Image (cartoon, rainbow, N blue to C red):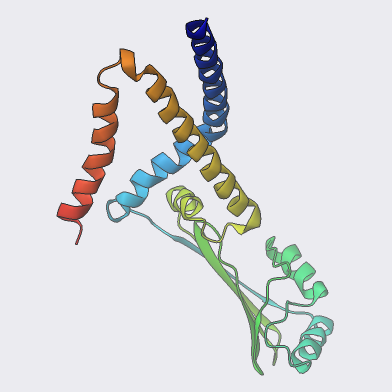
Length: 210
């Protein structure tokens, strides 16, 4: 009777672990592929040639919007967003969405940094004559995905994704370890392989990383 209870309990936990293991693996699938591939590209970043493409634009802010910029500068807020009408004008000219990002205000100009994954951009508006300069740098798809890996300039939503992915990956790894433990009696190489997975990185870190 006791053997039957133990067998039933083992079957229950094994089924539960398998369920959580496949659910977490499904949630991790795209993230695992993305972070594994970009781990390779980041590790060999010096060998991957990138040719940044730089695009520049120049324009003239209408008189009414120049006045709006001067009024904003006169309020003394050195980190205020661009006035909404100016944001709309920039978006209409070059499809650039500035949103509520704070600009750097001085007596001569307003300067707005617009970094993004895989590239950078900036916008400068002269308060004296309304001259507008916009420059965008695109470093390509490899740089874009590398920045996703690092969470560089990716925003709140992607930051949440990374956190959720990390939890799912932990669940995937821990349930996998317990499944290994439950099958270890019939698979003699289980613990030597797990041991190698732990010892090899430790030895590499201690012997070759200084």
